[in-house]
Length: 416
Image 1 (spheres, rainbow, N blue to C red):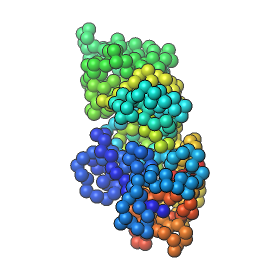
Image 2 (image 1 turned 180 degrees about the vertical axis):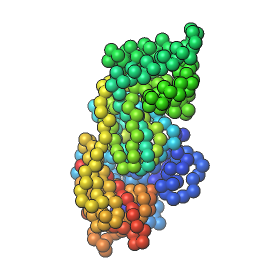
Image 3 (image 1 turned 60 degrees about the vertical axis):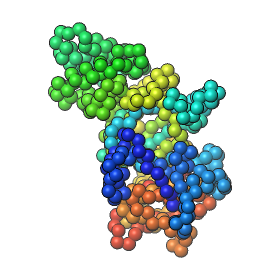
Image 4 (image 1 turned 90 degrees about the horizontal axis):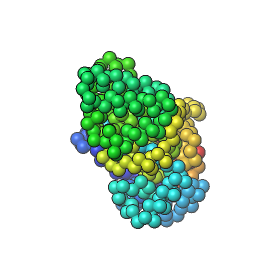
C-alpha cells in the first residue's frame, strides 16, 4: 500500500476556497481546480510506501511499469491503470465539452500522430488513444450542464429570448432577434445539431461576441423572463464569467442539473456537458481527450464536435448508488474501467474495500485508517484530501475510524 502525493492543478476556473476548505487549510488566494490521483502521464501521483512515508515519491506510472501484473492484476488487460480519480473544485464554469468513443479516440489519435501534430499543440483534439467516460459525485452543492434538453423545450427558451430581444431593440435593425428566431425554428423541426453548430460557427453571427452580449443585456432587463426560465437564467449567470462566448447560448440547449452532496451523474461518450460550480469527486477512464464546444479560449473544432456529439435528448444520467450494508454505498456506472464505493464511518467500521485489480482510496471528510493484512498489517491514516494506492497483489484492505475523530468518509475506486 502506498501513500499518494498529488499535485494541485491551478486552472483558471478553479475555486480559491473549496479544496482548502476540504483539506482544512488556509486558502492560497489562487485558483485551485483539480487534484489528480492516478498514473496518467499528464500528472502522475507520487507514491511512497506507507511504512516509509518520508521516502522520495516514485511516479505511480513508473511504479506500475516495474511490475504491471502485481500492481494491476486483472486490470492489466487495459495496458494501464484504467481510471483516473480527481477532486474537482469549480469556482466558475468549465468548457462545454464532449468525449469520444474508444474507436473515435483511437482513430483520431492515430490520424493526428500520422499528421505530425505535436501532442501539446493547441489545436490537437486527441492527446491519447483512450476514451473518457466519467462520473462525478457531489461533495458540496454542485451545478452542471448535462446532455441536450428536448428540442421543443429548448425552442421555447429561444422563442422567449427572441421576444425579449425584439422588445429590447425597440424597432432597431441591428439586434440578433431574427438569428435567435432561426435557432428556435431549427429546434422546432428537431434539428438540435443544426442549432448547436450554428451557435458555434466561426463565420456565423455569434462568433464576434456582439450578438451574445446583446442577448445577455436584453435578458438582464427582463427579470420576469429569467424568473420563469432556468436555462436563460443559467446563461446569464455563465455570461458573468464568459460574457461574449457563444457557449453562453449553447448552454440553453442543455439540461441544468443541481446535485446535492452525495448525488452523482455519469457521462458516456458523446454527452455534451459542463460543470458550473461546486466540489466533486470525479472518476474517469484514464484519458485527457476533450473536444470543446464553448466557454473557453481554447480550440473549438466544430466539424469534430459534430462527429463526436450525440445529438439526441436523453434523461439526465443520474448514477444512483446501491446500499450494501450500514454506511456502505456502491456506485456502478455502465463503464468497464471503474466502480466507486463510499464508506461512512462509524457505521462502516471494519468493512472491506472491493479490490478487483488496483484500488485508489481517498478520504473526503474526517480521518480514516486503511489497513491491509489484518490489524497488524500496514496501515495508512488519511485526513480529508489524502489518498492511497493498493496494488492488485496487496490483498484485502479494511476501513476503520480514528479514535475520537467521529464521522468520516472514504471513497474507493476499483474495477467493477
